[in-house]
Image (cartoon, rainbow, N blue to C red):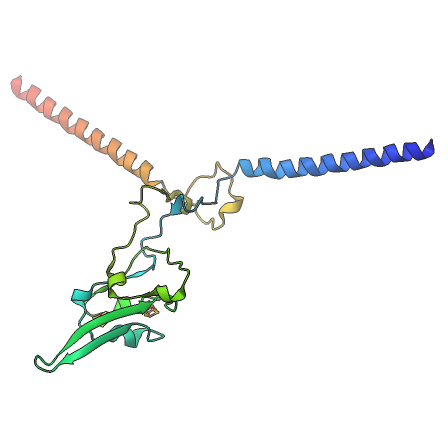
Amino acid sequence: MLGFLQKVADYTQDAVGAAKYLVQGLGVTFDHMRRRPVTVQYPYEKLIPSERYRGRIHYEFDKCIACEVCVRVCPINLPVVDWVMNKETKKKELRNYSIDFGACIFCGNCVEYCPTNCLSMTEEYELAAFDRHSLNFDNVALGRLPTSVTSDPSVRPLRELAYLPETIMDPHELPSNQKRAGQLPSQIVNELKKKKSQENKNSTDILTNKLDSINK
Ligand code: SF4
Ligand code: SF4
């Protein structure tokens, strides 16, 4: 009899322990339900990079004068400028230009110092490849216009996650009712529209009043 009671007591203790863990787990779940989501459902959702994001380099072949400044200012002398000297015109003739994004550190020095501004940094960040040799972009690949997150109809661009409240750097602990530092772009547009319609209404009122006074 005592053995049976002991078994019942052990079983009850185990059941209470399991229920405790279950409540603890659900507590974590419910706690997270109140928070702002910080995950991005990539590739269906994508964050919009900041305006000064240093992504894949864009190159304009026609503007390049083959001066090789980009090579000299690059910390690893990465850009390959392939040119020949035309003996008749005594000018350099550009044949090819390439940058290996498998080695580039996206420091932006080449873009900064290029005298003809034929290099620029884009917001393109999707450079993953199965073969690292395919990361070596020639002038045709470098000249391709970048794909923009905002113009891709198959993805939902997410700018909102960047708008955290002032002084907050970590969004994980953020309660959902916390005020953001600035307004969202959509809120700013709505406010500007309201302001504009109010201004139009005021100018119409002034005009009507003036016309009334003239008629009197
Ligand atoms: S610095 Fe500019 S112009 Fe000169 S070689 Fe490099 S890309 Fe061409
Ligand atoms: S971004 Fe920096 S590392 Fe990359 S090619 Fe230009 S200078 Fe070199």
